Image (cartoon, rainbow, N blue to C red; front, side):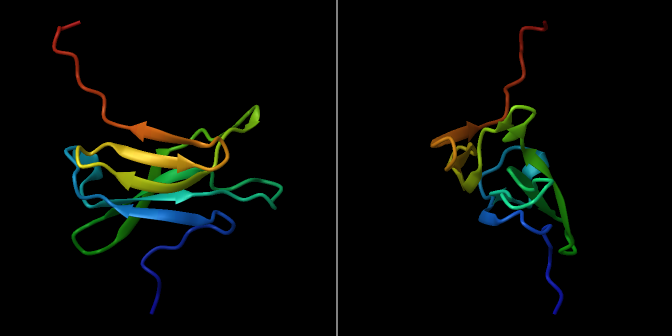
Length: 113
């Protein structure tokens, strides 16, 4: 049987979380995957969190969710796992920087400006 989704070589998908508490329509029927990243490639891969979106037929589409862990100045982080809070906030652990990031949707401004 063919896999439902394939990741690129050396990306090291470590943590996956199927989202359950999302108010954000773009994340309905999605899972987030922490791609730890490669260390043994001339062109690094991974170092991001991607969203896997599942359509009604079960087809999976991958898209960026959180990146910037590797930039012009080098490595600043390596995502390890993803957890979703009951309020829909996303928490991403990073074993390189030794931190946990909280990601949440921005609230729209109601002041008209």
